[in-house]
Length: 350
Image (cartoon, rainbow, N blue to C red):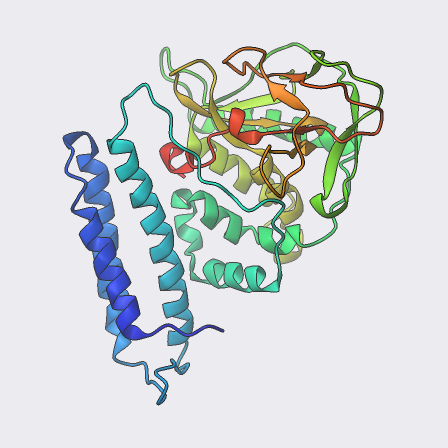
């Protein structure tokens, strides 16, 4: 396990607190105060442990009463908060009409045992009583998704999709009983359309990328390949999506052997954030069908080129068209950045 010098940890904490003070815009006052309080508490908690950590002649931390694990988690939590604050500061320099620039990710990156160990450490630090406040990546850790995705994942059967859609409908009914809508409030979750569509593609195992979709017939350039259907689900509230994940996770019971990490982690990564109309509010979207298996392509080094595009003009509108002729058996790939806002989870309270 990598070591963390106490001086470095304090430097990180202090720099993070100082960076918070730059958020002076009145429109972000509440967020500023929330982060300032959160980080002040983190500084108090983790700095109090520094004195109990002994060091070797090489200044390497020695594990003592679990302190090493706390410091490792502190460093990861600090790095995560630094990323969030950087994003907030970046947005303060934008006009309201501009979209966020998406952070680049490594092409076709794979998980390893180190990722599983780090995620298990984060999970151990989470308080289950505070599940309602978990962020996207805390949910990822709590459901042990790194451990799930290092496995070979089977292609979902039609029965599994039907079961998942049935559970969603049960969840919505229960959620409305627990928290009835008031007056003209918009639904917290709903099916996007009543339209069905049989796309010219089928699921398959796509090597190191895992599950994917391939053309089951020749598709001509400009042809509609995929669109939103009556299996497309919208969540207007981030917490309702979070609540759905927990309901799915515990639907067979709360004992360790009954928890459903496999399905929950699938649904978590099958979800994305976008706007349904230009400059409209953000929503969380997922497809409870094989459309969720479509892999990403980019016109960047190290990636396979995409062969479908979201929308014909500037706006996506949940319709994906072939940008080249696609032969039978060829994998269907799209650039997620055309429609998904990859860094917007914090804006949904996640």
